[in-house]
Image (cartoon, rainbow, N blue to C red; front, side, top):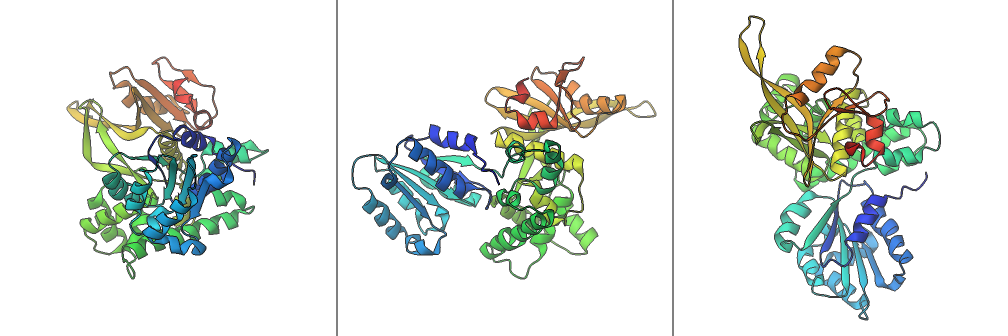
Length: 418
């Protein structure tokens, strides 16, 4: 497989060099964090002239390094390697395995010639430990599986095959090292059950309980649909004949989001300028992992495309919500009724905002009107966009809505500003 440069992430790390903060690389397990830090970024440092003995790299999940899982041992080792006043780069993989790692990293912050980069696979590592202990002294970068554009670069020919392949297998890096589809499928199935679920079950002592796996399957079947713990509880009862409490469902969802497997998109009332607490949507960090849970049976391209767009917006560091627009509508008897229209995504970054609809096909006038209706009910001046599956040249319709193909959106970082 051709090497994927992950240039955006390397550039980000480069920009953060020497900023006095711990650089924290997070993301779902096996998405390429270690390769980014130990191969791509380490090579980048060497190309900039950093001497090999001034790069201190430890993979803390390597059995050979088990002695450094004790905080004092790790601290003493790094201290022994810093022998002059030149800049040193400390790269630590899976730092959350170290008991008392917070104190160690805080200690490193007092060394003026040490620049520290760490990885972790659990968002609790970031949210509860790092934020509390570092109090603004940590700088996070979230790493995702390969994007569509990165997989597109792997294919030397037959570019038209990339979209269906990406919709099916997603972007976990090792998927694209396999040559056969059945090997890709088996890898993703094993990854979910033997790594992700096994990790959650072990960490939260859920042995003997199958509900967490059942919940994953329910979320996978309804990706992109509005739901909440009550609805999920009812689904357990109606489809599986099992009683499970809302509190348990809530806890399991937290476990899945803490492991970066699933993300929640909150609903925002565009006209009321407020968040709606429930229901909301859940998306999988990788569509290949989602498909693996369903044995690659439910290949609903519309919802998969929506999930891919959501992931790409997050990858580009937008804050992403699901929009709701309340309008007055007429019933068949002529009476007026309040109706909520959905905007697939509201993407915010800095002073920019985009309202985005995902449309698998726009073959009829009715379909066009359906997709753009909620956009046209928004009175502010922020940009409105419809991303469609079909290959089309970017264009603006008579209502000022930008229409682009999903491949153009995914392949061009600046596509929202066309």
